[in-house]
Length: 106
Image (cartoon, rainbow, N blue to C red; front, top):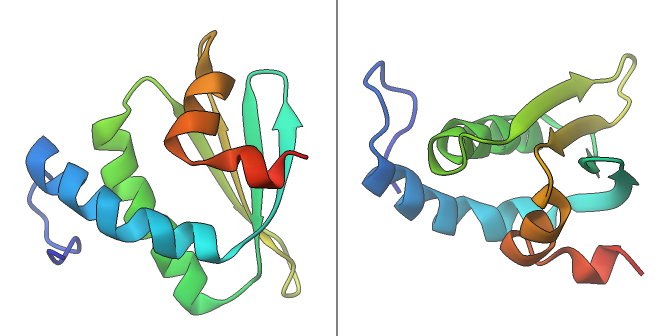
């Protein structure tokens, strides 16, 4: 996987390659998912590795899916890392398919 920490814009091609590498790792660390009106809220444990993983994934995700809105919250005192992903109508269905969320939404 390419180093994403450069100051160069990430091309769509590199973003798609990196997304394929990062997504399985990200999903391995997912603890819980909550449904929102226009998307989902994802919970991860508070850990430096996971925080960097989420940030790297967001760098490529915003290139691949620029129509989505992302909000990252790191709770105080070692609380969870929360990632909210929302968007226009159809976003929830898109995320269910794109992120293979069915196993967390039962």
